[in-house]
Image (cartoon, rainbow over all chains, first blue to last red; front, side, top):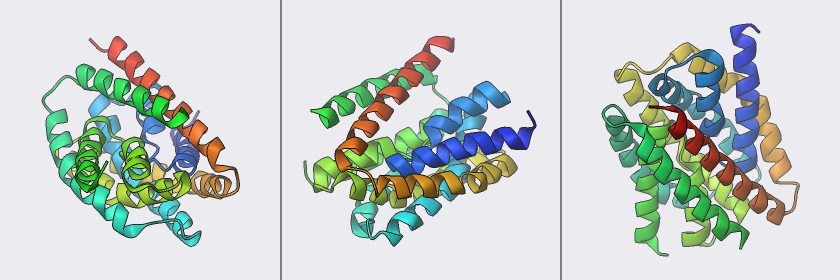
Length: 117
Length: 122
């Protein structure tokens, strides 16, 4: 399959995830760039972030049209997160990702259980 | 949970975003629900707005580290537009409980992916 067509498939799947669940779509993009397009792990995460800028902007604009965005609360979580992403990208350059991935996975399982209950 | 909790989760979401190349929404959404009492759809919408500056700064840093293929990243984003809009329209049309359960399923899926990847590498 041509490169641009693969990007279109990944993008469409990521866009749907983003719109449906209020996320960036990186959980779809990163593994597919690695498995399907032969990206290195760090390269996949960097490229994913660039795609997310556009995807989240479009999805946020669509949600804003429905009047669902609370801008003040977005700032409350978003501003500390900008500090966090500076730390996270710096950290990513020096540590093995295995431990972090497993810890993050445990956290997600705990949140999922809270949501269902 | 209070404002301090929301700020702490926000920071943690940013660290995760930088480490894993995601937007941080998997943490933003539950934080907005649990700390601020937003409904699931409002939390998702607000999460999307919070993601934009995080991903922008993360991508800029990764460009500096030589980990960004800009052309592919931009193409991916533009090609995702249709899917994103369809997703938002669906989420505003279906019952909130269905979205909550779907989001929980997403978290479990992401967790399983992370475990599988951790297993494969080194």
